[in-house]
Length: 205
Image (cartoon, rainbow, N blue to C red; front, side, top):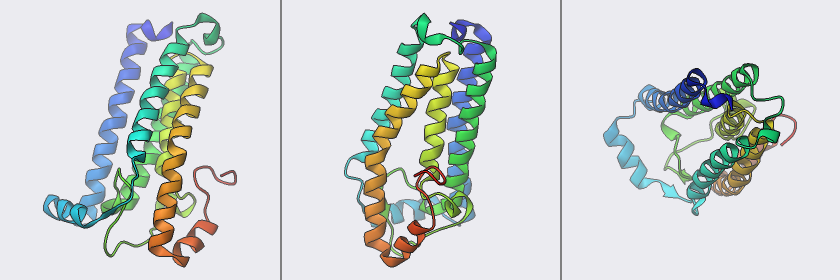
């Protein structure tokens, strides 16, 4: 298993750190750009109407299960065919970083409105800048790419596919909840926006 190689292990670990640090920086820059101080952030957070319905936990569980399943699958030699090499490791890292970049772009585009729970703030409006001009949920697309990429870095195409399917299944309920909340809050404005964009994959869904 290539992941046992010290350099490969370090590369995957460094990629994971880059994903986390990148999201922290994007969140900070987005709030700072919109003039959002910590005091205002917590004030607005308290005023926001939360409509998460537990889907945050479901998504987090799906990410954990996706990674765990991908690692378990990669331990089977027969499921590492054509993937347990430096080329696919490099492709996996590139997919992870690409997904992280897309998610960070989405976070930065939302700025002060980015939340990890489904919530609507007083005075909030629909934003269609950055990746939101094409996709309604680009940050979730980023998560899908991150999980699939990590699955491939573990040395198995099957790991990549299973990690992607698990996190997708866990995120779909979140998407439905989020879209219903936005439709109730913004009515025809959101309907018009939704009709001109795709959810997570252009021209597919």
